[in-house]
Length: 347
Image 1 (tube, rainbow, N blue to C red):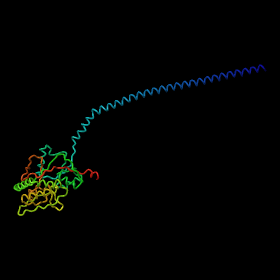
Image 2 (image 1 turned 90 degrees about the vertical axis):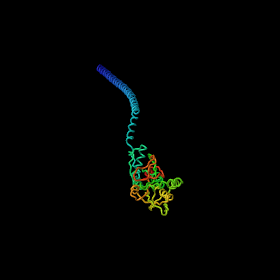
Image 3 (image 1 turned 120 degrees about the horizontal axis):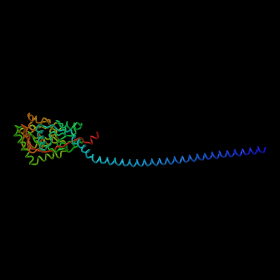
Image 4 (image 1 turned 30 degrees about the horizontal axis):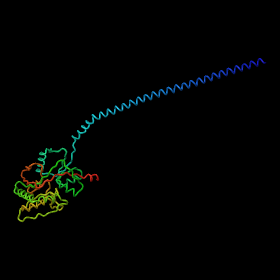
């Protein structure tokens, strides 16, 4: 019995030793696995850090070269601008030279003699007869021309400066602008060729009233200082004297003016009154349209017309057959007039 008990006790001890060895082996295996896991994680971290460092170096390298690339592009663009910009400006300037602004401009219709004077003036001052920058529109009266200017069918009109000032005093729908060329209207009187004696009487009277200061006084009263519509003046008849018919248009106030009731007034009528008193002759005013003046004169419907030439044409005297012209009694620059931009903006 005792021997059996010792055997059992030994078996138990051996079993405990085996269990302990297994447990120790298991623990060693577990510790080894943990250590291997830690080493693996450490290696992975080191690899990740190395990868990150390599990526950072690549990014730094890429950023550096990107900056160099941007700098190169900026320098290249600057060089291109320096060399190409002058050429672009020249290219942009070419259309401006070739493409001229064309102005739709209104003029009062002119007689053949007046057109001849204008052509001579252009020739003497080397101005092309057909100006490509002007689209010229002719009108039989100042009223119709102003209507088209207001309606926008034309952009600018050319009229005597005194007429422009007179209109602006009555109406602020327009403004005066400086014309491209300075042109002076040269005012004379014209008669038929066979009425040379009448032309001489007119000439002599004009010289007399210029010498005694009457002409200057008329210019101040009816042109320079004129602020209101001219008043009708009666030309006192000279008993027993000849009467000559004078065509008036009413289109160039205050020079040539016709009131609403049809009576002629203004500078030209005052001039006729002064000539009548000097020469002892009578005048009767007859309304005519601007373009019909010369034909009415040629047809004998009137005996005298007020005519416009161009002062800057040296020693000019029209070549028109069948006409006589007096010396100039007044010169007036032409003025350009447009719609008031403030009025245009308000519309």
